[in-house]
Image 1: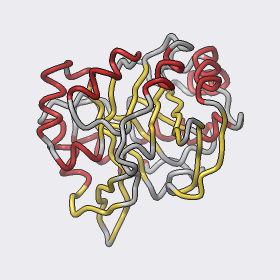
Image 2 (image 1 turned 180 degrees about the horizontal axis):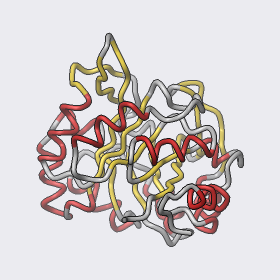
Image 3 (image 1 turned 120 degrees about the vertical axis):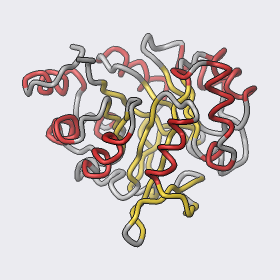
Image 4 (image 1 turned 45 degrees about the vertical axis):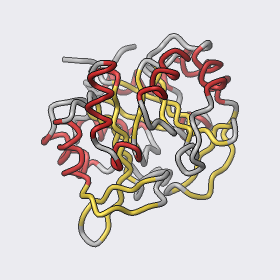
Length: 251
C-alpha cells in the first residue's frame, strides 16, 4: 500500500502566508520561506505553494519567492497561481517546482491540461478544483473562489483525468478554514470515480479529521494550512497518531 501523504499549504498574498475562512477574511500566518523550512524539517511529505491572487490580479506567480522557498526544502514542491501557458510552467520548473497546480486557466482552456501533460509528463500536472455546494450540486469556482461556473465538479474532474492530469487537489469551499472536518462524502464520491491520486483540502481542525478522511474517503493525501501554521497540530505527532490508527504513513 502506498503511504498516505501530509501536505502543508502556503496560501501566499503580497509575499506573506495568509489564511481565511471560506476563502475570505484573510489573516497573516507568517513568512512562507520560514514556514517551508519548518515543514520540511518536521517531516511533511510535500509542500504546496499557491499564489492566491495571481489569477485575480492577472499576473504571474512571484518567481523570486518561489526560488527562496525551494532553496529551503528537500521535499516535493507544487506551485500554483497565474499559470496560463507552457512558458509559465517552464519558468516555475526552473525555479524549483516539482509539480504545477492549474485551476482557472484549465477551466477556460481545457486543452492546456493535454499540453502540460505532453510537455512535462502526467506526474507534473495537478488540477486544483475549488468547489462549493450550490442548489443541491457541487460546482467549480474560479479566481480564488470568486466566480461560480455552471460546471459540475464531478464532471470536470472526470474530463481532467481523461486529458492527462496526474493528480487532483480538491478544496471544499464550504469546509475551508472552518476546522469542522473534510468533506468526506464528496471526497469519497470523487475518489470512487477516478483512478489518479486525490488530495483532500478544506476543513482540517483536529487529528481525528485526518484519520477520518483517510479511513472514510480513502484519499491519497490530506492538505491543511492554518492548523499547521499556528501550531495547533504538529506533523510528527500527527503522523504517529495516524500510524497508531493503522494508516500507512511515512514516519
